Image (cartoon, rainbow, N blue to C red; front, side):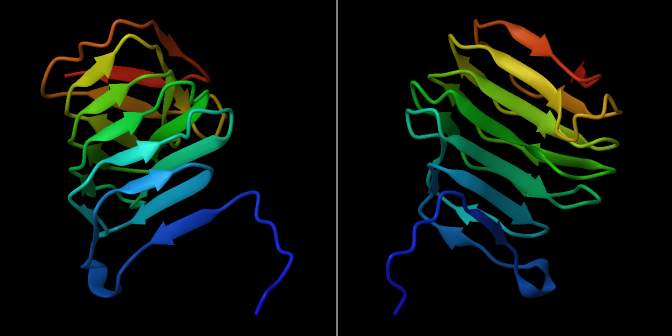
Length: 166
């Protein structure tokens, strides 16, 4: 038994042998990071990134060569001031194909050399910041494809990142 322990930051990586596997019913990332390794997924449910406060909450696809897809809808709850969604691949493209609903601003991030694609709609009246997760003014690309992006907040691009619309 562990007593008197306090965790202030969590990083959980979900991966499966042979790149096959999933868990169900969505996920709530209130503080910390949730990384999806190659082949991992959530069967059904909404992924919530943030907890309506200033805690840092991050969701990343971590298939280093690209090719992973998360189909779930994602929400950023109101008053969540530090929510990050992106990919950590150094080549290829990882994709979020569900809708992204913004009740607070969000930072969409890609790693230097990789691309993260958002093919579902982005909905809400809050802003999006496009950024290079490495902060190195590199060659990180966030791509909008598929359905229209109907959010009405501002779009800011930082650290040499690229926003590609296709």
